[in-house]
Length: 429
Ligand code: BGC
Image 1 (cartoon, rainbow, N blue to C red):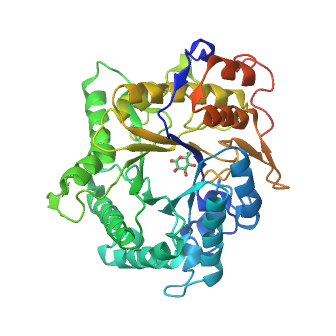
Image 2 (image 1 turned 135 degrees about the horizontal axis):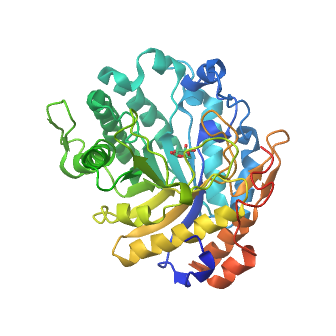
């Protein structure tokens, strides 16, 4: 099932946009004013982000690397907590840093795709109750209004928020989700005042899958999770109506139509087991891929989920804003890329207007509490911060150069299919 050598050649539509993605907190380092910084140090069993990839200092060389690897677009996030470390106190140095980042990308022919909030916000905002209180949205709106005009001469696409759809699946999470949705919508309208570039919000497209196909409750919980993570969002964007369990529906015309394209982050499927308190089911053992020493949610490839999910999004153009794999053995990344690009092509052939693909991630980085999961096309040595492109980076570069993927390219970069049976395959963690 992972036999990528038998895949046929595929061509992508003309003008298809290729690139990679990162997020500030995961690569920059020393993000000391964010709400996560102190908590990372306190929480047991979690590694703090520390210097991460030291990207804040090394961004100039990273821009060169991005260009050398042929990427045509680069998704990065700006850290609100650097730009406004104290409420109302703007940090000119941080602003200049991000302006220089997007300007340099542009100069090297790479289109900047900028996320305004990727999981982090300032500690002072956290203290005020963050997005939990509707009256706090004005702070986020003010931040967007402050930073967007400074970056807009160089930015080609905006993502207001990353993946708020995924969090909070309990039935009483509605008010918080509504606040996030409003934050997105307000961000959208503010950006429109300063920029012509298309705007979206990155959607975590988890493919929920019933653990037991015949079981009524597994199926109902799968549908429930799909609703509270996906459908509530699609419905709100399409109609302006926010529907969520245990809440009166809310109609807000400001929400309707606040996406210029669907921004999709897709990784794999998640099993739904209604007999478990958290509904998180085991993966099918025969398909399990234990690719790092740590227990980790990413232990299966399920490219079919990408096709099934994209078929729901035929009403707007789509950009894949994240897709990638955590593995020590980079050959698995080549397998993953080949399978998911084939699936993407199948979705395009089924009528989904996919315009681009950004791989997660440019380089190995801080994976929210641990440096063990390795998602990078480029290896990052966390002691020296040396960057070394992996074979998958050159495979991806060939695909970008030709705007197609062929069996010869796969053969060139992958000598044989990897197997977890080989000693040492989980490598030096
Ligand atoms: C997030 C990234 C994260 C990746 C891999 C996505 O949900 O946006 O920040 O690193 O998944 O877990």
